[in-house]
Length: 431
Ligand SMILES: Cc1cc2nc3c(=O)[nH]c(=O)nc-3n(C[C@H](O)[C@H](O)[C@H](O)COP(=O)(O)OP(=O)(O)OC[C@H]3O[C@@H](n4cnc5c(N)ncnc54)[C@H](O)[C@@H]3O)c2cc1C
Image 1 (cartoon, rainbow, N blue to C red):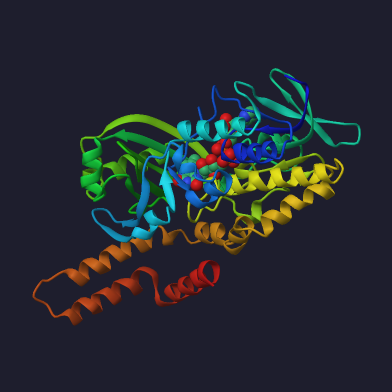
Image 2 (cartoon, protein in one colour):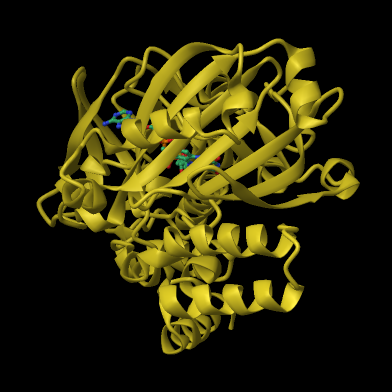
């Protein structure tokens, strides 16, 4: 292995592979360092990858990518103790236009990294980057690893949620507990035909289900169908775990969910195959660290580029990796100037794309939700109660039911509270 590459990419997740594919295709001598035994070996997520961003990097990816199921239906479930309200949308267009699909990271990342190798990148696994090298002027000019130092013109760090390399280079301090979620996931084996019957799907169709409510704790749950497995888990903000005085809270919520009368039948007869946990940087736009410095760019989770509202992370990672790659290519063309002023182009690419546009649009949502926890606790409960009263037939006139519904609404949140919530929601999320 030469000791100098034009580009060193740290981490072979979606961001790193996308960056390496981009620079390698343009003929730049690119090294990708991955600490796992293979790309994806230690990686996990809920399960949804988005097709269009993937196709922009690997056209016709579906011919070779390890796809589990194509999502035809999105569901939101709002739970109470023993009921749920379901909002769902099934659309043939999701399949025709191929909007998203489920995958396992161990297979998907390995496949994605192999595309980088096919484009000409050198992938070195079982190697951990331990920090950056700097010249006497403070410009980053390489990476130190547990197997020795490597020099480069530019470093693209895509080392995921812990973001140790950017932190070590002084781009940011430790993430705050309110900006980081912990995600836990269980994978269940269930025969293909059972999955198809339970979720009303056929062939390679799949369902994505998000779950909220029913608990005092704020959490977001997910359930995704794979070929013959189900991915099921929750995410919870770290600072909430501290407040709940139980770092076991995600497991407690997961156990409760599994016994919930609406969810239990979906997992009946399924056998637990795997348990995994991982961090999710959810601070949003206001918490994004500096994205570049002299000789280095930061991508994906390492740069807090996750849209927590819609659990979108892989597409942000892929696009940021690609933009960093394009910036490196432009820097080389500019005569090999990899200074911060040249790498500022990376930020401009992101600002002109959905990545920073979406995060900016919803910049106040993380704080809004954390300061209005009743959206994820009280409102699901209320919606269940209101709908129960609406559908209940008990010999009393409907007007009595409606009056009771209004009374309950006002007593639990108050008229002013309801108006404030509606305005807040409109301003922060919808306007
Ligand atoms: C529970 C959960 C559910 C999620 N669900 C979804 C979902 O359904 N859809 C979606 O789009 N997103 C989802 N996400 C978010 C998504 O997984 C991330 O946003 C995405 O993986 C970020 O990609 P990345 O390449 O930036 O980082 P990662 O995927 O974390 O990849 C980082 C890579 O760098 C390697 N690495 C780390 N440090 C070093 C080092 N020092 N040296 C060498 N290699 C190193 C790691 O081994 C890893 O391969 C979820 C996340 C979690 C935790």
